[in-house]
Image 1 (tube, rainbow over the protein chains, first blue to last red):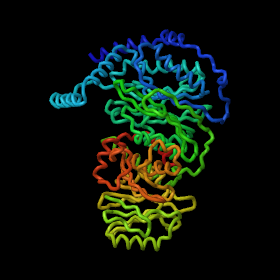
Image 2 (image 1 turned 90 degrees about the horizontal axis):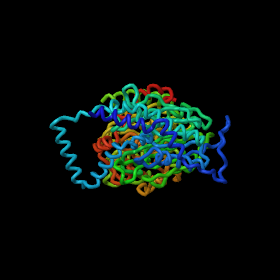
Image 3 (image 1 turned 180 degrees about the vertical axis):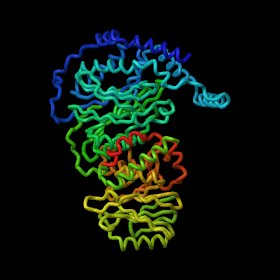
Image 4 (image 1 turned 45 degrees about the vertical axis):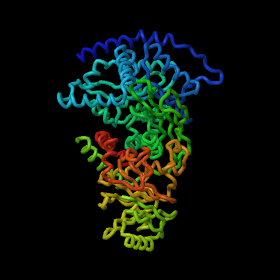
Length: 375
Length: 226
């Protein structure tokens, strides 16, 4: 039954994201006249080492009733970024899943969930959860098909979403970090970050390397390689959310020649500023790389919680002030410039080496991580 | 475990179970410092952690307890200094601990290796950071807070990235940093002592090791060693 439903929904979504529908959505996008004080976009010439103008999007997760409305919302981010002469725009984690909200079934389900959440007092929800747990103990866990199986019929989503964003990339001549989507492939599902050039071509793909507990439980698979994409706007390391909680990811990126990293996040928890601090912000100072963090957020009325603050982060030793969105639950965008020629002193506090120590550490890291992930 | 951060020559509160001597602006000469620490340890009946001192062309610090003296050489010292090659994790009445001398606290692999070796409490001492009223810190300050920022990049980040306690002694004071989940405000700050058994709760909140990616690390072993 559930497989049948997934197939029906996927067919419906396929129709809604078809080429003619995309064309139609773009045809109705408003023409925004260039502002007189904004110089027209010029592609960067080879060897140009001037700072890169970037935009970190903080996007609110919404249920769109039509592709036109969704495209118009995305267009506003691009258009504003253009006004800031942005060369690279970055969208958040799970942003590529937003087209699923076009399905009436999904919208209906989430609205019902929201109504239920509003009507049911906390204590009653707890009681219900308790009764579900009790029931589970009696009958065993409910047999829900694994996520890769359920998402397999949606394997076209990656192509269609990429096509959608490629049209924007071409329309505005920008590099685009599309954020991520769940991508089924060969019986597995990856949380996948897609990166496009200004001509809409795919320049890089990065599967999330460090999964949250929930993602592991859902059966999402990890990537095992880190993409550092060489472009005229610098060598860019692609990461996803919790990858930034591990200094190893940034350390590898640095040694692969990255100038900066893009970290789309979609944190499904209430905002806690201290917890937010333990990722990107720390990593940049340890490695001397800059980083762009885009964030998916939700309004309190949305049935799922997404929080975070988009920002552009610089190492402390650079003396450059990092920029962060002031709110964690509303749409906005953060703009800044990233230097391709490092401005910091060479002696970063976290960049010293000791070959003997580092060999011992790497050996232990591989051994222990194997032990822990086997458990 | 309650840690007192004191200047050389001061006496810790009676309630302290360990005393850490705050670092000087320059490496101190070991002979007199070690003698004073041994005396203090004997008189108070508690272990004393020394400030970083000059040691065989490099820097080191020591844990001085009853019948137990542990030396830890700095592994990432300034250029021209001798380097230690490993982190020593040793048993204490409060569980396995390790020392972290000067700039080593800013090298994330140092605390990681200590944690892999079972360390529950890393005792770090560096004059490079100033620690004052840490409870007043807010994450929003970080982009502009100079060497207070170093506090977050070094000791605070080491505690969070590995789910361990870090006792950090700086120029003007010290702080015990715990995984965020173990402190009431969620900041990891503001506690004077801790029960190592609580670290398991922090680990449940953020199971850092279970999300590691051995295939990634194997593939990029050369980069991780670089």
